[in-house]
Image 1 (cartoon, rainbow, N blue to C red):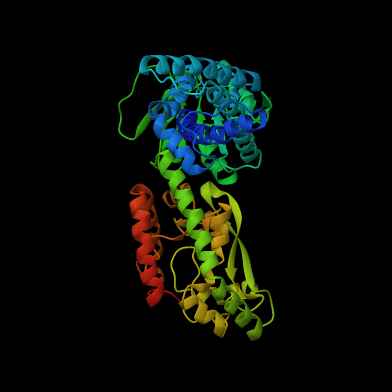
Image 2 (cartoon, helix red, strand yellow):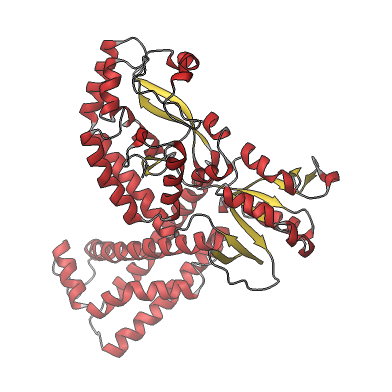
Length: 485
């Protein structure tokens, strides 16, 4: 849970550090030249001119130094634990690591110059490069940590935890979470099997119920993971609860140090000093999810720019045909039940939602979904934009905001979710999307249960390659209007 995220962010930090060191190496060449021109100091060896071409010549002549700069700095910073526990480190500790790395880097480079007899390497340049690198690394790290803190404060990348247990170990676990608020973890409540504890506060969090109440609580609270920090005698009571969480697509973790289980789809990890067994219902690496999010941002931005003329034409057509807003806003259920506002082009008359009850007996879809092929509420423009899937385009803004993804199960209405069977709720365990297997397989020609099964198939077999294939299939479906109405 936390360990994997920390390792992923550490790799990002190493990459950013390498880029900063490379930029510092380049910038130092020009800073060195400026200092020499202002102080009339002697010219630097191999510095033919203060241009990028001159820098390349300098770097080539000092090839051993050039090639060793980034590896040396990264190895030293790793040796001084720059990439461990970085989220809880104070500024002066961070400064100490960078300065110590700088000091030892000078010793390493000095040894390299002596062993390779690089007589013409400028000592002034080494000094300028070292100081510049220290300053740039300090600025970079403060910026990155401020950015991560701001993201967590605004609820981005936040994990909501339901903690089961209120004993000594559970209380210690809760304190660890509270002391590391910058990890993006938020406890929504506690569970204890003793009836007398219901409603009481422990470590600042309310006991919401007993083990048997967990399925009900999952429907009323946004929970991303259930953490069991319970006595050993409780283990036999957890079977039904873990299965209930599994059915709904909620990840679970058990804090236990009894033995090392070797069961399929179970992952062992650590939360500070707590060994955890994680039962994941959706399997993806942090780097895969990171790339998926980058793809979402890039694709949605490009499409919003390229399709802006269609946005304008559609908005004008809607306004000319009927009174009312251009966009239709509706509350939908997202990842693990999070509510968000979904945007669409208005394709119906104003007040269409009020007339829905009158038409319910004409519903052509089974399950909790409402669909009519010849819905009398749809306008003429609405029928066209629905056939071409243009009405869905404003959801690109939802993708850009992070409420949705380009590929993922379609976001349901909260009232539909209330009517789901338990096994169907697991489709909420992945961020909703603009398109998925259902959209490219006939849409309204498929019954509700098969639709839900398709979404679960997507979740269970997810990969970046599957997303790419579904994107290409979606283009074909949109061009030919297959299954749209």
